[in-house]
Image 1 (cartoon, rainbow, N blue to C red):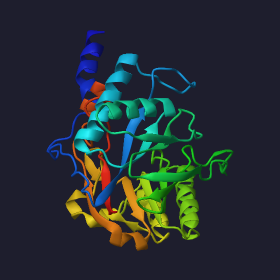
Image 2 (tube, one colour; image 1 turned 180 degrees about the vertical axis):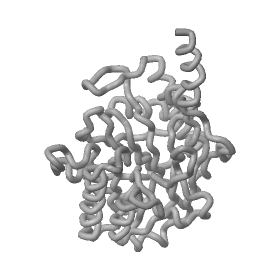
Image 3 (tube, rainbow, N blue to C red; image 1 turned 60 degrees about the vertical axis):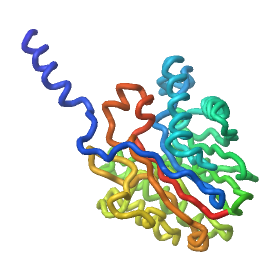
Length: 310
């Protein structure tokens, strides 16, 4: 028994996630100027409330929920300089989103929320927070009834928000299937089907498009890149190209930098893009994230931000 305990004490720390070494220092992004407005995309790392809403739901304590709401609000204001639009992934429901909006109102920024419940059995959804001068019109989801092998193709259906001002365009917020079990044929096929369906939808649109979110894929990474390459055929421009090559990442998989979060635009919008930036301080800090339950840092993803001319 003593030997078993000793082995456990030695091996368990090795298996536990630890913060990566030689990480870039934490930093925020510039504030939008009077002549621009900013749009950011951010995965909020399974941001749950304190109630058990389904069999697969793992609620947090009320104290952790309050701490996370405060920490995310502080991050959005202090590090992201309160972008005018936030495209969010892994948000459980409208109520927790509105708690965030309330906290940011106390900091002087009045946001409105948009969320449509999807098909994720664990309750995760995509969402949008926006503030003046942004105005929106119709809101809908795509492919919410589409089936794949008897189950929903999209656990988190793409959310389409019609932007009316200061730019007339459709914003699409996505969160594709992860690469977990990618060697399995059905996982690869599902990711490819999601990419192909959205790419075909994009090519059929006439209004300007901004497609943002966690795509769970990137370039030049073999089988993991297949869904990226399929969506790339839609003809949209990936705004990572506006940043130096060494800055093109928003996540770290086993400490290796990856660009999982993307913002794509139709070619006609490129002249209105004045700047692109990415925050630092979240990605690669696994031990700190899990140990604080998402308070410091608030996510395992860094935020990608684009600034448009008004």
